[in-house]
Image 1 (cartoon, rainbow, N blue to C red):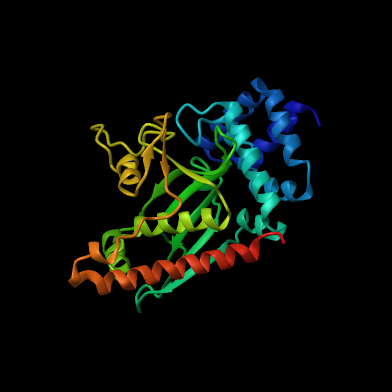
Image 2 (spheres, helix red, strand yellow):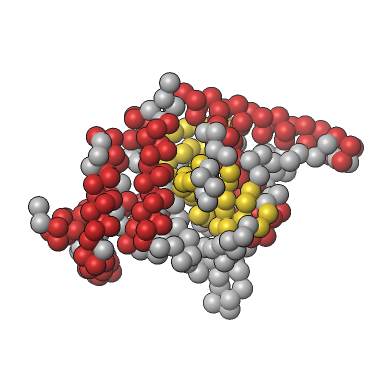
Length: 306
């Protein structure tokens, strides 16, 4: 197939041409591919190098769109985006069973933990998966879901080597609930989790996944590193501050202001640091976190290659 025609066929898989906005993005995509034909041939060849990668690209053709747009983090380059896509996919291919990798990019998911809630919300489940709407910030997402599939909190990330060559998890975004009664839902879940905030819960689960995969480091985009400005209100005040939360969670700044470094495990308060009246709550909270650790480790291990 002629190169230009190949780009057109890829674009048709990614965009709905009946939608005017999507049709415009399709035209831009084909143009950018043509201007970067050599690099696009490289990423196409990569995904044609094995049956597994072919399957991933067939289910999730957005891997061909991601290099052409300013995704993942602020001022990322075409070459950087291709590199991190390839490294992420090679990490999955080298560590996970093929059927698990396919599940991550289809309508299925890797289930890691489940908690019973109440008569109204029934339960909450922690899953690893990838959806088209998450492609701007990463290549996989860890999600806390209600039974109807409504996300409570999610962290979107990719896995690639850092400057020192260590396999690292890179968090591209953390997103909260987008429902009418979001505050009430989060309040109920926080109470169920023994006063442990849901955004701390999703970060703790993310750290557990990183540890289970033997990943050495975690980096997270700062306010300066976020790929877009939709976390900033029209008056330029932040709707949410990534940077503040990462530091609060034990993170530290790096020599690249776009990324903070996060610990692989949350530091827990000792008994002496906890007021007597709160010690029972903290014991229950720590037991819950240990349960998450155990469940995540078990389910990750069951999905890994022997």
